[in-house]
Amino acid sequence: MVDAGELENAVITVTGSSALKVRRDMELFPGRRGKGKTVEVLPLNFKEFLNVHGIKKWRLRYDEVLELFNRYLQVGGFPGSINGMPVDDILDSYVGEFVRFDKSLEIMKEVFSSLMLTIPSATSFRALAEKTSGYSYKVVQDYLEFLRDLYVLEFAYLKEGSRVLYRREKKIFFRDSLLLRLFSLWSGTKPVESAIYEIVVQEHLYRKFGEIYYYRDKYEIDVIADGLRVEVKAGKAHRRYPRNVVVLEKEDIPRFLIELFS
Image (tube, rainbow, N blue to C red; front, side, top):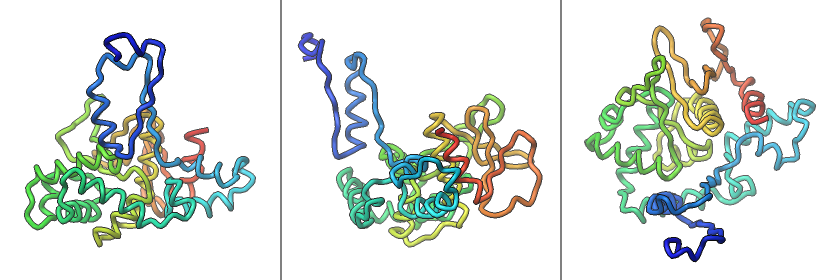
């Protein structure tokens, strides 16, 4: 219909219950999208989360902001979980996607488990595979890239100067705090406490700038994004960082996330 000119003045909205299928099917329409654009409907960021809880002038209600941040870490930004939908229902929808695309649930659990044992540190597909019961790094890579296409995970690569080192260890982070909690429970493996704070900062910076990296030399910088250098600490920072590094302690994170989208 596009090629025949029958949709010249039409608007077509493409949606679907499977984010992965919609994402892949879009690739079948090169040159046929006209002035169309991709709208990614993601879980709420923290500022949006505050808005739906009626917090507009957040500086005047910062005690409530801190309380809501703790809740955000638990329920994430999914409207269903915010409104009390059983998290098992959200988990089941993801497990259904795994089954739909012929992924082994046993392998998937092991991949999540090996990831939980590693984050927020940088890692490689081989290192993660070594934490499984014998699956190859190619299998682990395939499953992680599948989860990336499903908007569950994203990768942050090592960056030195202007050079991105794609083949080196990468940081793998969850796209929402609820997803970290769900798949931790599902795989039976708990990550270190600091992981949840770092993944929330990583995801917000990724949404803001479209790409993030990390840096490692004499010291490690957790996130680099568009000139910003951010180090996330679950507790107090015990070392000095260069002046151009923003060091976020736990109580600093909510303010940083809000101002990022203000």
